[in-house]
Image 1: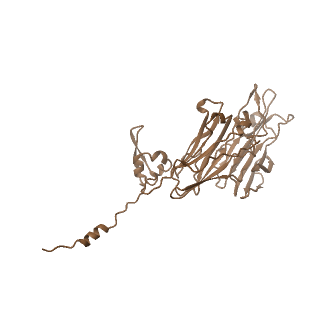
Image 2: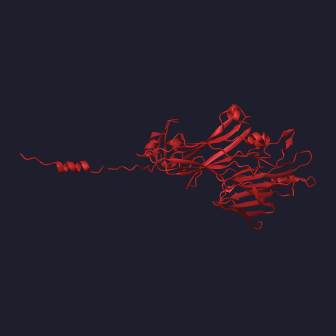
Image 3: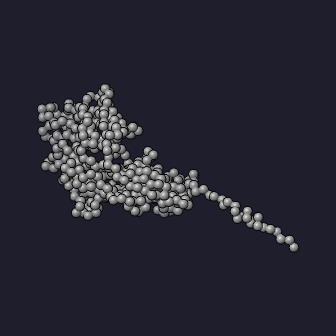
Length: 398
């Protein structure tokens, strides 16, 4: 009887390399069951990327989009949450205050903020950070949050800005300016640093140079929000950097170049004719994105109020309103501004008031430019270097 030596074959069988299956998102559409309607809906992983926090909770989504849902073998979970909220104790909260939070991923042009609540890189924005002691209990305060689904290998800049409101003018300005929200950053549920706040702004009110208008012994609202104090600093940044193993650092960075613009009218001249006047300021950044009265909340600029003056007959009240724009991070950047008179229907009905508004520009609260309005469109270019030394160039009126 002969015996066959199988050792060679056995060796070959047991040392053959296993077949490797790639972990990839499917490129086509797939079905997702909707519990609320009992029906199926077609989805793509491209859609899931804009809301992984909600979509990846569904098993059929995780199965078809494992990369987006961060469930491939060896994947490291790296969830980042930044909550902006006011102190929990009511005794610490007085009057009215509102801040905002947003986050930008370095290398992406898709910011995560109230105007863009779901991004292509897995960030979701929810909520509204404010408190109001004069409202009902359910409106007393709220928090605002930005959440990054997979922060591995990413760098992120969180921006916190104060939001100027009419309530700050009409209520106790001292109490309002001293109240600040806390920013709490967590990675996988753990805090890596203390909470952050914007500067205290001692003896700096949120608004200045306004006169509250009364009608029938009651203050007229929405008249003063544009009188923003350019010296009030309610902005700061927090940088979050994570490696591919979700080892992250969290660092606060004070803003070094805050650019502010104001349109204000002179005091109404009692000897001038009755009438109406409105001016506008439109600002464009280097990506030609607009910040204006109509587009007043962007990822890089907030605008407030409306530059309008009405000198009324004695049987009605005068009003003199202002416009302001605030850019928290202007270092090393250039902006194009259009300063122009707006001839709308009110001017035709109420008459034309001849005096234009003044445009004043500030860098970190210090004035560096001022000009009176002129007929037509006045184009102005503003450039700030990395040391926040800002200069202007003016083209002839259009």
